[in-house]
Amino acid sequence: MARWLGLVLVLIGIVSTVWLAITGQLTLYIHPRYELFTVILAALGAIFTIGALFVVGGAKDREDHEHGEQHDDLKDLEPDDRAWGKHRTFRTKRTFPHLRSFWLATSSILVSAAAVVILLVLPPATLSVQVASERDVADSSLRISESESVSLVGADSTTFTVKDWAILLGTRDSGSILNKQANVTGFAVGSDDPNIYFLSRFLISCCAVDAQPVGVPVYDPGWSSRFPAGTWLDVSGAFTSGADVTAAPAFVLRPSAVEIIEEPSNPYVF
Image (tube, rainbow, N blue to C red; front, side):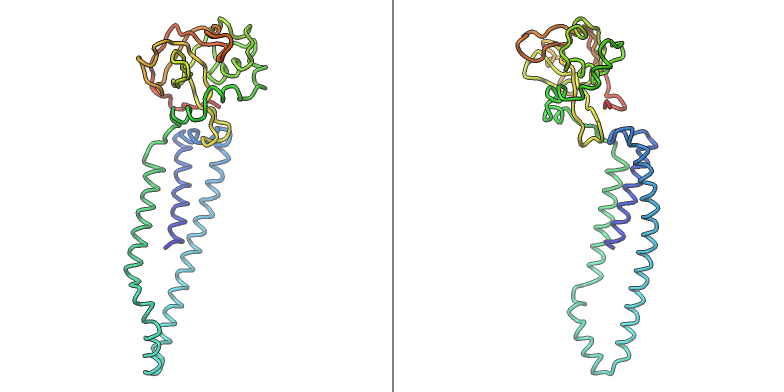
């Protein structure tokens, strides 16, 4: 039963992976560049798992056959020997094998059902604002790749994402930042300054496990009275110097329009 359970769980995992890829939700867990590779591995895993099912089935048939032969051997014993054989196997029979099999089967069904519900029925859960706070969005924004900043300086900023602006803000190049118009989408994460929140998104470089929050500081006094942290927003405005030139953030986005929106179908940046 344990062998069957393991194979069933593997098949459930494979089916869920393929299903997420078909429905376009696999990128909620991994970077798009790994999607095809993951699907190919899932297909290979399905082939090997189906083969293993036949192997396990054959092994079970051999066990049943051997058990039948042992039972026949016991029948061929002399009466005294048969009595001794019964006495020898009495302790193992007292373990209530049928009851044990029932509980194993029930547990296997429950585990398999739970796996189906978690992987196939429940919608994929995205990373939360709490995770962004724990991973320090301000610090993460400063540590993302600086190599991309070269291509961003002087580029058309009307198409910049939260990630692009976070990279550019990390350069502290005032000529490329001050008075630039921005229109960005993300969720609000509070900061140490009650007048500032970070408009954030999670940056996935490999998978959701290593996702890091990146964000743009938005100077918006009284924001917490209008919407809670974690709210998805579409913000338009222009960048200005921070209120305190001696402290971070050096630049902030002063919004001209803030619109509360639904979470996008793919909330991450890559």
